[in-house]
Every structure is written in C-alpha cells, then in structure tokens.
Image 1 (cartoon, rainbow, N blue to C red):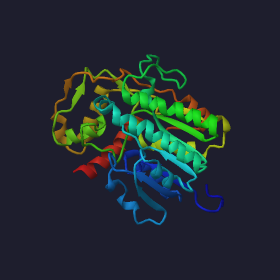
Image 2: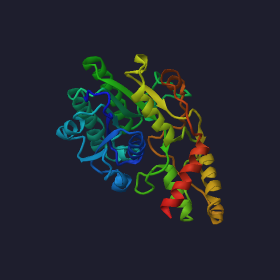
Image 3: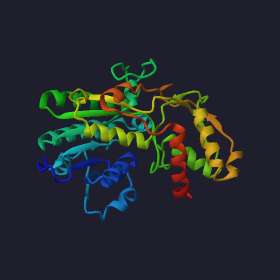
Length: 329
C-alpha cells in the first residue's frame, strides 16, 4: 500500500474493460486517481478503455483473475480494489456452471488472497441481487436472503461468504455491493447474454420486435450506472467503521415491470425516430432461474454510507438512450 498521503491513490479495477468497470475507470481518472485495470477481455471490450490508454495515470494488465500471479501483479501497491471481474448472466451459468464457478469463485478467492498479501486498504466488490434467490419478501433487505436459483447466484453468495471470512480472519476491509439490474452507457447490446435494456434498444432501433419473457409482469429495480458509481465511491471513501465488512443493496428502491420498461424505451426512442412507434412487442416463455420480482430497500446504504440515488429509471433511460443513439447508429 502506498504511504504518502500527497500521492494520488491507486485503484485497481478488475474487469475494467467491461460496462461497469470502464465507467468506473472514467469517473475515477477524472477525479485524479491512478487507475490500473486487470482484464482478460472475455466479456469486456478494448474500445471501452481505448481513450484512457494514453493517459499517464492509467495502466492495463492483460491477465486473468483465475491466475493468482496475475492477481498479485495487479494488486501490488494498490490502495483500493474495485472488483468487477466476473462472468455475469444467469442463463450463461446454467449453460456452463463450471466456467462460471472458476471465474466467480476461484478468481474471487485469488483476488482476496492477492489483496491480503499486498496489504490493500479496502476491497470493494460487485455482489448481486441474485443472492436473494427464492426469498419472496419485498423490498429486499440485506440480512434476509433465500436459496439461490442459479449457479451464478450460488457463486455471488459464495463471494459474500469469502469476503466475510477474510475480513474476520485477516482484517481485510471488505464491502460488497449487491447490484440490481444496472444499465447505462457502454452496456453491450450484442451477444447471447446481452442485458435486456441494451438488447431491446438495439432491436427497436433496427425495427425488430423485442420479445418479453413471460407476460411482462415480472419487475426489476433497474439502476442507472451513475448510482452504481456513487456507491463505489462511497464504499471507498467511508470512514465509518460500522459501514465496513458488510453488503449493500445498490439500487434505486423502485421497481418497473418489463411491460413498463418496454413502453418507456419505445416512447423515448420514438422521439429520435417516429417509425419506432409502429414496432410491435412480442412475448415468449419465462426464463429458467429468473426471480419474479426484485425491489431493493436502500435504507442501509442511505444510513451507513450517505447514499442518495441521482437518477430514477426514467432519468437514467433518457441519458442512456441518448448515448445509444449516438453510438449504435
């Protein structure tokens, strides 16, 4: 860990070429931090970080969290870690549970060991709302979870257990952020496991009918990227000892059905292109491993971290769609 308080702090962002990771890179570079990225580009993209590569305070280590030596190299002299590297997607984990486990569990443990050995000040990691599993209570409160419904959910719960053990056993300060359906600029609309918002946006822009899984009554706490950036910054900055070594819902505290979401997208995109108004919407089967409803309580983050979401879903969608319109056309 670097000692001089006058030197800019170094943040290691694993998965920094991904959607959330690259947004974190941009934000913290602009705040004057030294940013180091560890990424193997399995799901991230070079174009997400291309504009940072020539900046003096940015460096890239092309490596894999499944390789302990890569993790140790990346953690050297880092002050903070924002661990975003993971294989996301419930369907991907159902199709290939072994690789999901290797990355999300073995890779996570490697990062914890490397962070401990490098005496990193704080380890902030991307947890997941999937940890709530079959719990039917709403809103979701951090200390009440159910049984996981997918291999992906299992891996993200194991992350929380390992972080807790490392904080108690080795004194490593850990904070987990349970992300709820994050969306925004740089989120990839392509591929078999694309998230619903960028996927639907791309389809609307191509005049293709989006297919909603099931009746469209399932609901989610869709969370704009700027709210997630704020939570990561609060997790790094907090001096409140009660705020450490725990997990936080990272969300807005509001829920939107898939039917409502599609109507928002259609309405806002029609302002860019009136022809989108005539695109029809289709319905398909429910997806295996999906929970029906997701709504976060954000009281804990407000109380212990001072979290104040900056964007509602509507505000976030309008910003995100402006970005997509400029970058997907």
